[in-house]
Image (cartoon, rainbow, N blue to C red; front, side):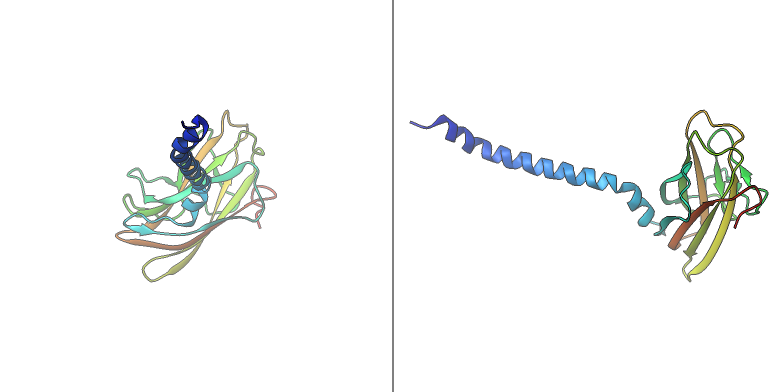
Length: 191
């Protein structure tokens, strides 16, 4: 005569091990998913372009956050250039938009950053983003600062703005990128 409790335990032991394995796998996947945005910003490597980078706040902008960064191609409809002049910033529209931060050609390898603007930015405030990028087969350092101005009224919903850096034709190499953001004290008054 068998004790049904011990027989039940012996039968469920493999099931218990499977559950523990599945729970462990689920935790690992959840942990990886939580790091997904950070991983995208730190190491991206499709076939024709490779890169790594960091997003650094000099002053945390509560209304502007980076959501993702990865390698891609410049779209067929090349985005408008972001302003590189203090005092004449690109004014953010009431809908999301794409911009390029350097000269760009459709189809070239690119780095794409997605930023989100909240529904409560300061009105008509200028802010800057400085990109420090090392790219090319023979590494070349570039520092590009772009300027944006928030809207005169709050956007109806959070908006996504996409920025592109043209890394070149053929096999492009992005060794490093650092993005620095800070709010200016007024339009035309950026450090």
